[in-house]
Length: 116
View 1: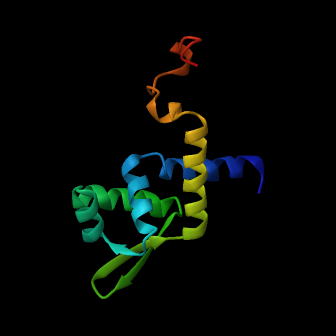
View 2: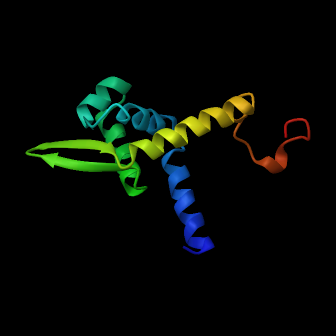
């Protein structure tokens, strides 16, 4: 895989994990496969919102879909690797003092030296 292809794949992965609701879906799917209605009830989000997030996660290759009759079941594409990524993210955030999650999302060119 060349550098450009690898960068696009990494960007897709991080995009899929770039929304708190999508991360919550991924974390819940670590427990096993679920239907949209189950995810909706667990997360307290609208069905349309959960469906859009699941579509994004499928497009990114993080989630698979299995149909059974009229039911659609969603599962993680690679639970062991996703679990490892989430554990590494927790360790990275802990090492940074959680500053990454608490910092305002602003243009870095506008940040002062103290904020960086």
